[in-house]
Image 1 (cartoon, rainbow, N blue to C red):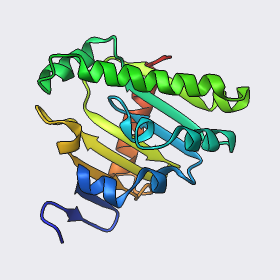
Image 2 (image 1 turned 180 degrees about the vertical axis):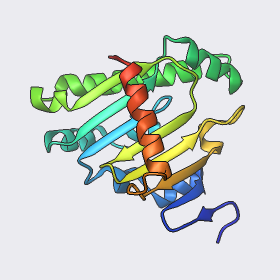
Image 3 (image 1 turned 45 degrees about the vertical axis):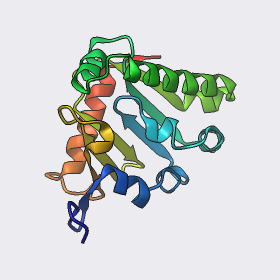
Image 4 (image 1 turned 90 degrees about the vertical axis):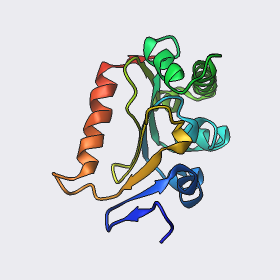
Length: 183
């Protein structure tokens, strides 16, 4: 087993670079019926997965909920300071990704557009959470002074254990969604 990789039957941890190789965006999303994503700029959906594929998913009935760290909020400025960005890099990237999805939503048929929900929140960022079909949960902690690509990525597939990690992060997403504002 490669150094730094911890595996068990229902969850495992990968370095972020290894995660993107082991779980390409197409493998995660191509057949999904529901995608819930919360984090900073949600690059896995916005930069790693083509617009035409997102449109195909939405047109075929997939529900996509995206929860971005508010590019106009204090939480993103605090994260930029923590990652030692002084030029608004994270703010700009997040605003760009929101605009990209907003433009996509504007081009969709009304029923497809309703399935693409975009929200923002302004809190201390703790996790990037991706939940696919209520069956797979990908979690990446935001570590102090570490870019997202430098953080470990946890893949959790056991959604049946009431005392397991899956329901914990599903609840974190749900609570954040309730406190967020639509875009």
